[in-house]
Length: 284
Image (cartoon, rainbow, N blue to C red; front, side, top):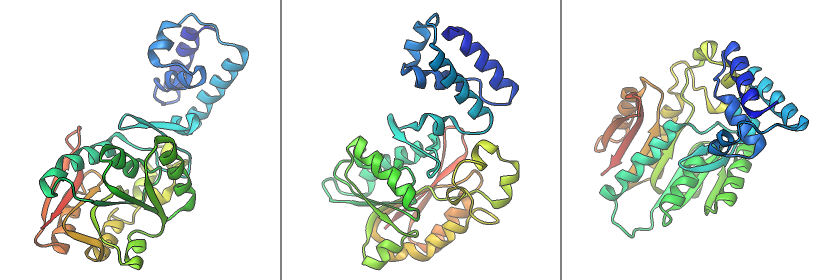
């Protein structure tokens, strides 16, 4: 079969099974080691028997629920390729916006040339910590995660991308509290999905991505409440806190931050889809 024939088969098969029809193109690029433009320029290339079998198996895996990113072993984030497996959450485009807004806010809070420290809590694949270090090379970045298997993936990504990040195993801010360490900037994309939402979510997510990185109690706010108990012990002033939140949680998380830091300037930022997605607190 030729490229255009297998793409047509994959698109039809994926649609029939309520999966994204474009997944076939992504998987074929992976197995043929070609960019999208190379693939489209070689529509009449005939796949070998081995290539065809690999591709069909991958498409069937995705139809059964395995995310494309876990099949290819990678995902793009902020223009870089990150390794992923089922021990880490797949980086989302919304989290790129957390990086974007953080980078925009830094010059208005801190003096240029300061040796600023940044903590990424619940780092998973390391996407936030590594990206911040590569975008702002002077930052002293520490990333934590409760799970060693997640940290293993993050360390590999840091090495592959050439980012000098310190990785520490621990629950939320405990590693900093134990060492009596304080930070200038704290970012986190914690679990924020209410437990009951699992019933209506795609099996592509619920059967494969780690639940410890997804679900957070009845209203999805459990981790933010825990953060509020610990943040005053680790944040410097001036300082910046940035959270990714679930749609509709912006006001609640902003309220928690205002009660914890009454003098802070708290703001809610919408994502590209005009949904509340990030909450920031500038500590003064």
